[in-house]
Length: 187
Ligand code: FEO
Image (cartoon, rainbow, N blue to C red; front, side):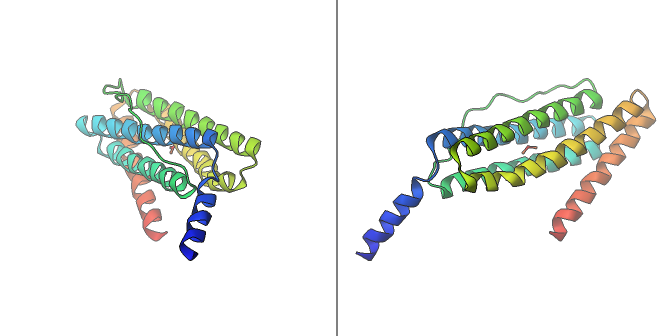
């Protein structure tokens, strides 16, 4: 009897998220995984070019995107949906320079922000306050990520074209990577 009630409760819990949100979150899971792969590919390119600071910064961000992906996977499964992985396109392999690379990062993050906002819109349509609440962490995270990447792009544009500029940017990115690692360790 107790077991049956438990199963019924679990079942009730498991039909809470809508099919529309389940599909949209699965697309977001793919986008976060693709973000991780894009930054991993970029990190590898930077490392191959001797840009160790930029590589470290991007390896770190690749890991963060994987963590974002996992947050969505766990959330969807916890809410009675099913997180399913999708096939992904090959990320870029060549970049002209750091300016082009970080312009692409910024455009990608702006795209991710739009997709998070689209998810919030679905939650509002469906009055799914729980998922809306869960998504607010990502809304804040996207503001921070866009602002951080914009500051990198601005610095690169200011210093582009000179070897000393590249050296300075690479060191600046190494510093950002260390600061982020320290902040994470203290959380
Ligand atoms: Fe998880 Fe930077 O988007």
